[in-house]
Image 1 (tube, one colour):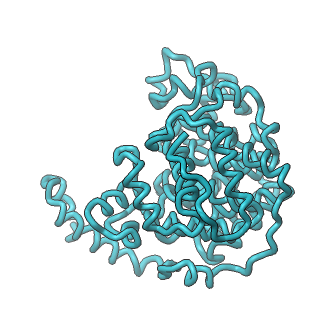
Image 2 (spheres, rainbow, N blue to C red):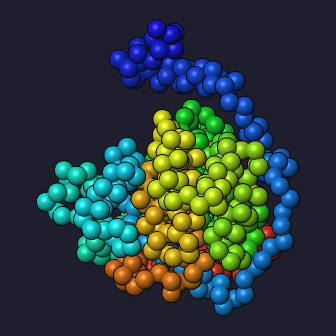
Length: 425
């Protein structure tokens, strides 16, 4: 038995020894470093940007389409999130098990909310939110952290402008997010902030989740306010992600923000994806993952074949890690082929972090097709409002949030004054 295993086993029986646990975690992190060289030694955006491919010319949409596309992004994000929520358990709801279940209830292709028999929901492993997220039961949105952070980062932009800092994001978290509504890397960073760790160091301190998907789920609004300007969106996302993530976890938020921004000027999902990887380090594992999935699609593989290959590629990786989820989002967009319902349905069928993945894919599909491409069977049950744990924002109007996002997007300069003083909806 290794020394580290012995120390861990001892701590299992002494859970209150926080200092010993942190020392062990630090030693394990040092042990892991030589096994995978890291690109992330940059502590400023300027240092990281030197690793990125050259920026392409921005394609900013006209004012009319912009309003419709941002509305499509918001509703697409919420709908995708709702579709994936009841099966957000990648250990249980694998792609294979999802397809067996959906085929058994005659729900393939998945183009509507997931059906479930109330008498079987618990035994099948649906999450408790099934009572408000499954077919025939949606009556307004169900609160979720994926949507909380979209609202929160809109608030950050309104309060501080686009030149907000990581410290501004940290202060906003402490002010508006309940601790127990944060998870994994965000909770680790929040804990560090409360213990006095500076915002710039919070994401890299005692945080084993720093390459998970938590930063990526916070990205979309940065893309919405930078339509056709993916490098600018990635720069905003970097400041937010640095609070809680490093390495590919950091790149995940940059990538998603760039993807959303690129969708505004793109002819299809493939062109948006092509552009998105220009805004993360080209030799990163994340860029390679997107490239592999795009190559599988170009080679004519079926959806099932691509998802099987993705699962084998990431065998043993946690279902909330950023890399396998980025691959799933990419696949959903490509094989969805511009159809909103097909895109979010396939993304959820890929398993893993189903609600987060379908939220991002839904936002991109909502931009590409506009609001009208989202069927009324998705939108009408939402009743136009959002539930949120963000203080002052519960029961916000989705249309009002879209309008506020559009107001910032219309400010073309990279550094702007705050645009709204409101503390909620």
